[in-house]
Length: 68
Image (cartoon, rainbow, N blue to C red; front, top):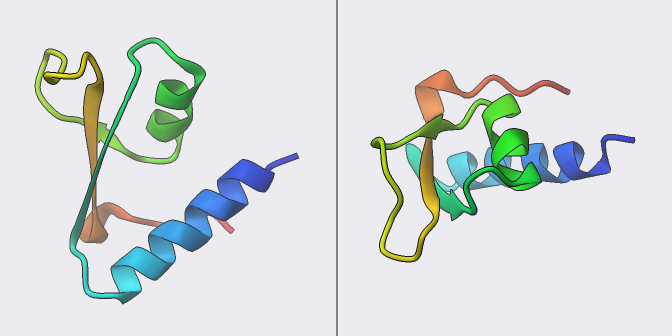
């Protein structure tokens, strides 16, 4: 129904409105969350996993286009 995506977009808009220009997150590789963030425009950072076994992603303000 898109509630998760709506919440994500509001959160991202708010964080960028606070002055952030880059957002970072990590999630389990191969998870539904990873697929969600990729569809939302997040870009993987590096080829491997971080120290916690997560795949790192980033989203830059100049690449953010809200899909309302």
